[in-house]
Image 1 (cartoon, helix red, strand yellow):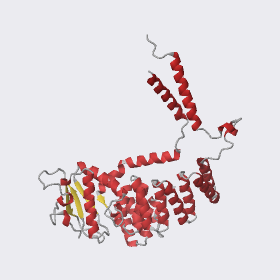
Image 2 (cartoon, each protein chain N blue to C red):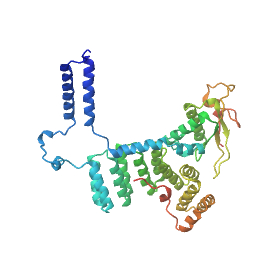
Image 3 (cartoon, each protein chain N blue to C red):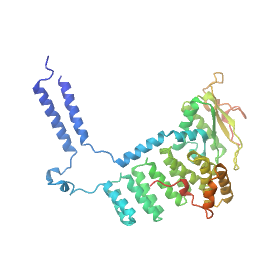
Length: 240
Length: 174
């Protein structure tokens, strides 16, 4: 049988491949590798900065401990070090919203959108800032962009519905609620929005429709008698 | 022969290189995967088809152009109407007569662009709206393309109306 490759040629090829691989690996290794002579596992990562993921995990722990101020500093540091790390913008804006600093939260989210303009989550959360600030036109704009980017998201459409309802655009609000909720829940949600607008006549109408579609809703209504339940938490909670 | 060996060497090197590539942030990839799943979700498309209505929120404010959500929902509706007949409502809301007419013309163009034959589309008077809304128009998509309608070169103007004037160009929102 004829020999396909000579031994010399095969050896030369393998050596060439190995050399290429070594050269390429040098390109993606740490720049100051030559200066390091790690002696054990702990020394390997001793000089490295914590990653964004590590700092983010720490920030979330701080948040869970109620240490919002320390978490904010940590998140701010992440954003400056790694502007592409999107979760930091969401977490920081949530803290600011809890502190009633809606403008600050909107600024953080807008900065995130400069980096990642197609992140629907950031648009949705920006919409929440505007919604809480009662800037309904801007809120609708933000939720609409979020829904356009992720058109199958029930959350974004539900938030759109709440905003439209708060603008008095009940028909459109109902249409959107119906896309994402059963009929009784859609009427109930719109009723809550009407209550929030002090449109009690329309609220009663919607609650009656909800009860007609599902008598069990009545129990919920009697459990949450006046004052009006907040409109947002029913079906339109922000994703953070 | 040498070419084959060179290729083998390059392939080996490439395989080794992948081992030291940096992987994207898992959080970002999770987000992307979720978004893809959302876009492919058939439930929302079903809800859009059930309503078969375009609302003012589908349009850019004070404009006849659809926004991104409007474009997406329009694609769902057009895909549905490519194979089926039915009505497509375009709600007027607070739009002026001129703006509303421009929006309907835009919707017809979108349907045509998305593959619905123009000779299957007709404009009809819709029911008078509630909540003080004026009567509106309905875009009707017929089941079978008619081979005997007038020429199809005039797109929006060709869309005859089942009631009212015979030309879409003179369409008015009451």
